[in-house]
Each structure stands twice: as structure tokens, then as C-alpha cells.
Amino acid sequence: GMIFVFEERSPQCFWMKNTLIPLSAAFVADDGRIVNIEDMQPQSTDSHCSREPVRYVLEMNQGWFAKKNIKPGFRLAAPFFDKAR
Image (tube, rainbow, N blue to C red; front, side, top):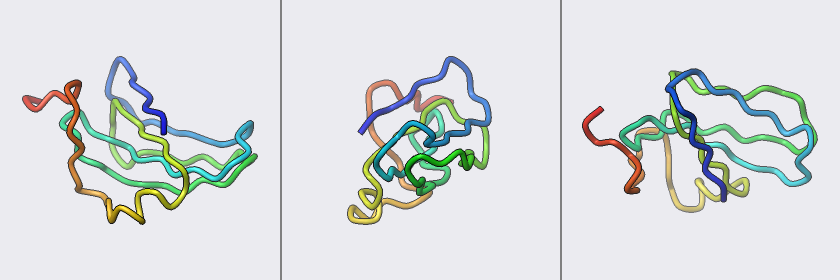
């Protein structure tokens, strides 16, 4: 997978125009809470957006979150998630 880290919280939108494999994007709040997960199709310009302002987006192979039973509301743990926010 790949994590995208943005300087400020804001609505984030992703598309897959130049990507050849299906991916899922988890939009993640500052405290590690998954706000929403969107499945994205290869070579598509369809926009997939966070339901609230976020600073992080975690992309994984499509189906990975479902296989791990990870859903919106789940909290990810990593040193860079600021628990105080």
C-alpha cells in the first residue's frame, strides 16, 4: 500500500486515470480513524472523496480492507497519528 500525507486537513479526492490495478482508498482523520473507504477502478477519472476533511489517505489493493474486516470507524495505529487532535 501507499499512504499520502497532506500538510493540512481538507477534503481529499482521488482518481485512477494512470493506475492499472483496482485500489481502495481509506480516508483517515488525524487520530487514525477511518472516515470512509472507497473502491476505485483502474484508468478512471471518477472522483472518490473523503466525507470530511482529512490529512491522510491510505491506498491498498482493492479488497484488502474487506479481507481484514476494516471498516469506517476503525482506528489505525502509527506514530504520526496525533491522538490529541
